[in-house]
Amino acid sequence: MKNKNRLRIHILLLLVIMLPILFKFYSPILMSWGIRNGIITASTLVFAAWFILSLFLGRSASCGYTCPYGALQEIIGLQILKKKPKSEKADIIRYLVFIGFLIMVSYSILKAGGVKGVDLFASNGNFQLIILVAIFIIAIGLLSVLLGSRAFCRYLCPQGVFLTIGAKLGRKIKIPSLHLKSDQDNCSDCKLCDKFCPVGLNISNMVITNNMDNSNCILCGECIEKCPKKVINYSFRTND
Ligand code: SF4
Ligand code: SF4
Image (cartoon, rainbow, N blue to C red):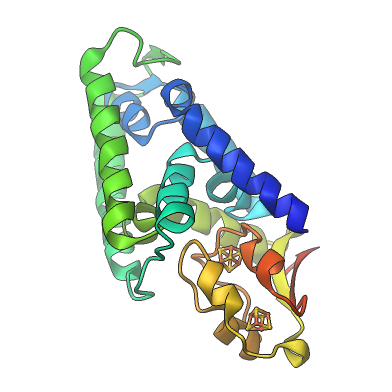
């Protein structure tokens, strides 16, 4: 498991290095622009694929392993500054942002009057959009400096809420899906797992209360790697 998670950090680093190319394939700004103009962009298709995967893999395949923006925030916040997001009470802000985003998307779809075309790489030659994407990247980087690892994911990202809904839906309709499981009897309450969670969850408490399902968990496996007692592990199963 240790090697597996070292591999994950390398994947995150690669995502950050490739961000100047990857933003063409996935950017919330380009997706929003597409929705507003009735255009299907590569970002919309990537997001649709992530949503389908969330039914089986929760937020692991998207937020945990392939989102370059999440990677940037985690590398800056946790790997470089050793800073976690502080509050677990941030959900209210994220859900309010999500409701605002939902209203904006619904209004935009109605106003656009359906799909007018496909422009996968909408940023090609569109300097206004490229500047907006650049501002977004700088802003989420700064948020991680100020508020800790994955601050944007934790406090603001409306797409994380969509993916959480996908994960919950998968569990509700009893599709076999990825979970965390724990063996609380072996836990020494050393709290090492808490220290390394990139989204700042109180994992030791999750273990003690035997409640390993948390909508903010991105199933990254850092707690699995760091636990010296091998208390936490993945499990692929249907919901009980
Ligand atoms: S790292 Fe392992 S032993 Fe320590 S508190 Fe977390 S689950 Fe318990
Ligand atoms: S609880 Fe574990 S798997 Fe979930 S986000 Fe935190 S470290 Fe990653």
